[in-house]
Length: 141
Image (tube, rainbow, N blue to C red; front, side, top):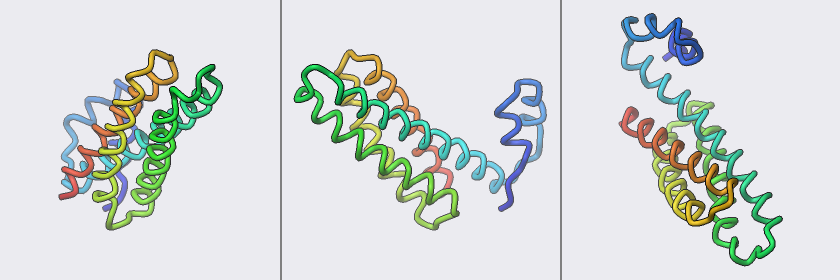
């Protein structure tokens, strides 16, 4: 499969949505678009998790945030790994994305228990990443 510029360009601009909807895509093109969205979501999630860790460590009662910090670190690590494996076309990308979705779910659940804005933002990024990882996994079965 080779990257299809229409897919990636269409994501950036509504003006090109028409081209995106009516272009005759092969299964390969759809898989690559799904993978690109998943890579983006993984990178965004890893960044949100790292930010959450940094902010949690500045909280007055850090002990209340221990589980959040632990899951943030695990989630950031698996998200970066999944993104890197997809970028090199690794044959185990789908398997790692399945695990990534599970870790993101756990992190989102924990972060959503805290009212801090950084935790809520992290939870949202984790939910989005879990969704994209599941979509990627389904497309590559």
